[in-house]
Length: 98
Image (cartoon, rainbow, N blue to C red; front, side):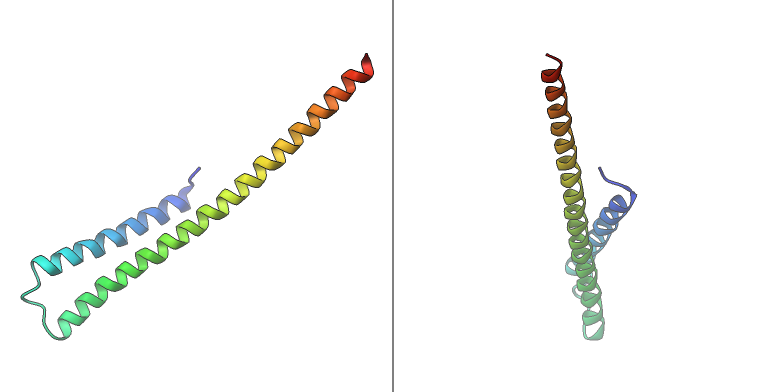
């Protein structure tokens, strides 16, 4: 299940990805003839930086998902072992009664 931190992280990653994509499209379609020199370097550096931020947030999200998956898998294993132990105790108790 996702919690508020996961939702916020995904929203933030999508925001940075959408802004960098919009900047790329805007820079190629509208601003291409107007960008030159320092403005060109600055504009595309900001676009690149936003893309890198989106990638970092995405990798943090993958890391958090793997951590959550590991804890859920361990909880499921513990629950299964507890259920097997309870089943064993019930069957041994029923054999003793007979």
